[in-house]
Length: 612
Image 1 (spheres, one colour):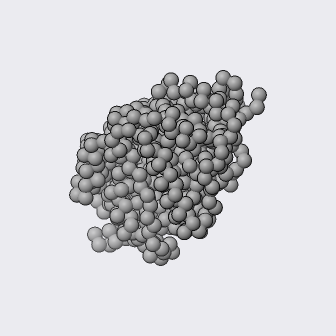
Image 2 (cartoon, one colour; image 1 turned 90 degrees about the vertical axis):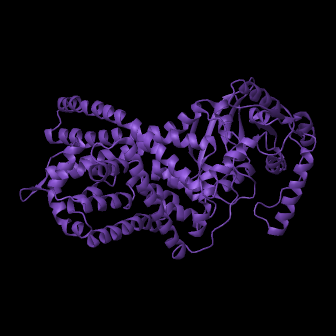
Image 3 (tube, helix red, strand yellow; image 1 turned 30 degrees about the vertical axis):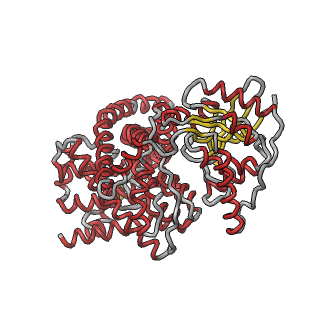
């Protein structure tokens, strides 16, 4: 049976992903567009008479491309691969959506106009004459709510009818994708007027946003209240993550470490040498277990909470609030969204920088994303905060407040680094951008769990695990190979001791950070391994015991403060560095991304150490 390729297009925030999932279910795969770093999703489905492939095109407002994602969308829609277009629009904002719809109609391909989010439009009191709009446009128009199950049958029937019908006429001529500004302005004005005329008599009811949304926006985007509210919400997210992750982390750690003995026995039965068995079990497996136990529960809580805020419509308000500070730093307000993603994982934050149109501003966001601590650094931050500044029995509330203070410091350092870059190697004016504040919506819990757990948590955990196991093997070798009667691990720490003490720490701390490059979660157990001269990764145990070990090795309040600073400000992990290389396309920018936070951290640590 022949496969029919259909492009799924639309503006951002119109429910395009919901339509895609409703049609394709689990019969989909993701990757990158050929030669591009922008994500691509394809899925298959069957109508009553056909087998179809649905290609999810990046959300865009126009065929006049500015960002890389918009160029990908334009190039694919102009290519010959899709034989029809399923255009998803927000039923409550038809005029704004018709601008893009008219551009697509000029391509001469069959177009099915899907007015989604009808439940929201009806709650606002809007009534739509879809038959009149269909006659005026000359294409089929359907109105539905994609999150409801019955919408699938409606979509399948409409797609079959679309592919049976002849191609529509070309109502308007498409200008060159990157034409001259005067011609493009005239064309834009003409399409705006045409959109208004087409909607006359189609939309009945109030055009203004709901009064409830306006009341909430007056609070969440208030010039004074917005910032303390953002901090309070951030502290709440951290509290829920810390409180919820403690027990699962401990349970997962016991489970994974209990498998070490059976693994060692199985490797022994294979006839492997004892040293190789120890390297694989005590080195690779133990490190992999640590990374999984420490990373998985917090990410499984943090990412759904982050996605929940995204689904509710709050994150665009955060971008609106932080646009002015970023503009003063020569950057774009969208950078705050990628910065927020970095709290979960800096690699995910770097990937999210694709939403920024300007290459200069995208590089600013990429190079400074690791200034905010990812969840891999939270265990060390929380341990040091609890042991030296909040008491070893600190409650989750105090831990969350302390972590929020550290995050505020990190954000301020990110502003400083952005300002420095925009005044030196990345000079230029900050660009203006159109920021859409979507309506507040009821979150879709099923989609939240799917997107946050499958697309983010497991993907990032897989990347970290891929580098953690080999790093664990190397760590075991360093701890068990001796030179002059001392383990190589201890000798390396001694060699770094002079530099470490100059920066308010010691050689063991610097070495732990260096060896924690593959995964920041391993820094504390590596440090304890060096201090206690164990031959394998150590279990941190109770915080009181850890504090005793640290004090015995010369730690003070100044040492703890320097470690906090350096935990926030040091080179990104290997996964993030690889992602930066892929996104920035240059080893030079990757090296700068590693050096910039490290220099900031070392300078501040030296100031702390010598002023104290």
